[in-house]
Length: 328
Image 1 (spheres, rainbow, N blue to C red):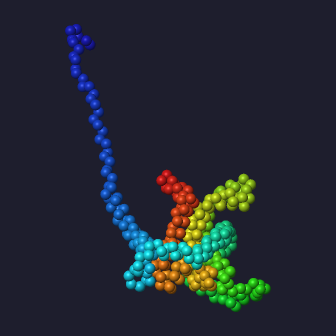
Image 2 (cartoon, rainbow, N blue to C red):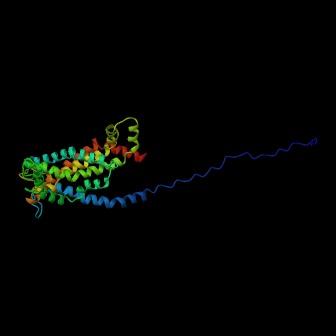
Image 3 (cartoon, one colour):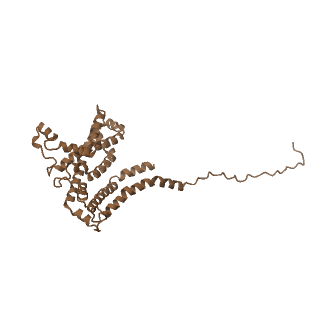
């Protein structure tokens, strides 16, 4: 009830002031020093091993190749690039390089279809699949020397291979498999194919295991035949595996040594020589270590240039896709 004469009391009100700042969570400074220390500690052993066992021998071999050195005592007189010119101008080395190229082509044209076909067959649910896989892969795990001695005995004149061919009525085709100048390199290709096609098969099998079976089922529902599904789905998805095998096969074919050296020694008359057997003959047997070092450097450069070009033009999209998936 209001009383006459009363006055409204003016009570000052406190105006709301600015809200106190909310304290922000401080970002912890990145332990850059700690990360760098970890990287150094983890990478230093591997880096030291790489430098000591890869880079340093390459540099020393290149330096030794510039000297006329017999392998005894200190390095001989400096010869510059003389040894390298001699190697590249030697017809025997060029012939050995051609033999390596023939082995490369044969490995691609024979081992790839054979390994891929075996992988497609043994990827199905068939009886004895595990045993057949083991049987096909077993030659690859044999030591190279064991394989070479075994085939050397099998291919001897009057040996097991000759007897089998006579037994099946092919006695007229019997040859001196390791002594025929025009046949010996192809005999070596058969031995190499027998030992290494299982590696192609097991790689292709690993690639096939990563292809979802639903894709082939969907293609079958759409009316695609088995060959069409293989050509349109399986082979494209198997592309990265095939490209990796091609790289390993080419580099390995350029460095073939053990089987050829034990079975033929590069003969007869250099008919089966490879670049590495040429290196051993001129570097170790002839005590021309400077010349042999030049051969080793040239072989390294051939493999290195091929690896760079293959990485640049063939494997680039595969590695780019892998990096993109890893970052995403």
